[in-house]
Amino acid sequence: MFWFYGVFVSCVLIALYAASLHQGQVLREQALLICFGLYTIWILVSIWRCSFAADLFWGLLARWLTVAWAANTALILLFLQVNLLNRYAGT
Image 1 (cartoon, rainbow, N blue to C red):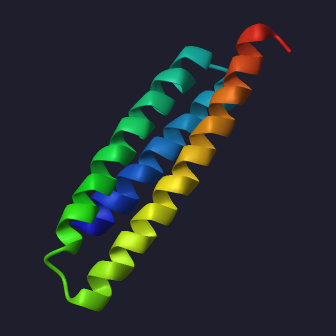
Image 2 (cartoon, rainbow, N blue to C red):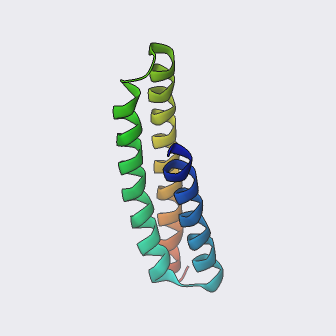
């Protein structure tokens, strides 16, 4: 299920965002950024909680990768939001 929830759904959200960006649908982009942020929080909490049931090495690896994934996603969402705000302002 990890590949479906963690990878496939993320790819679908990214594809929808890319299509919205290409079509210039600013409100849809904003909605997708919010959805992607909420989805990321949900999936990261799920992976973090499941990591405690794994072998010590794999559980620790999953937690470190979750922290890296959270930091990466936060930066991506921040930069995309700043870009969107600039487009709202017309600059």
